[in-house]
Length: 284
Image (tube, rainbow, N blue to C red; front, side, top):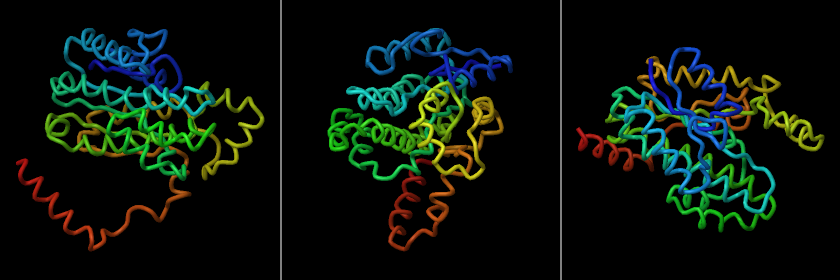
């Protein structure tokens, strides 16, 4: 049995993951704003430092895995865009930076980061905002979102999930992660029936917008089923899974972007491929 850290553990999909892991006999260290083993506010630098240190202390310096499920959705609010960027991006990468040695100490650790199918189904997310988040420059990211006005939280959400997915893809294959025996992957859910979604569906205007979004199989996902996917990605069966983003969204991503991927690599990318081959050989 292993020791796992789970952020966003008190509700929704995070709570469903905790229930699965505990039922399987694992030790779980939950992180959330309340009702958790570690109570911390991931929207602040102090809160992130507190969460990172407290988990390491409780785990004794060894983590068999981590699930980064804490996140904020695009609700209205003057400061909402900043909170989304802080929690959804920095609340993932800063904690994982701090936990990486403890994950490496377990030798075959698995990490699952919660992304979203908004990464591929939401148009017009500014690339500048994504680049700024990857640089960990939240004020710069927010600056590129000002022109969206009251819609800024929605675009902050999309940018945060694209940035965290790209971070996972980039870091997962490096010597610090793959080379240390850590498998780093992301899961991209669609509309999952959590208390947050139920609250949105209770508002007629919101419900109409949500139900109009294409989900080819119909309906909404189940938090327990999604948790089963996460637990699978934490298991030994995922030893060869590295840098992947797994979509569990009822077919929405495929509906919008069926022809976008996979695609043949164009000739203009050959030089870049050869360069990456050379870089890989240099690491061996």
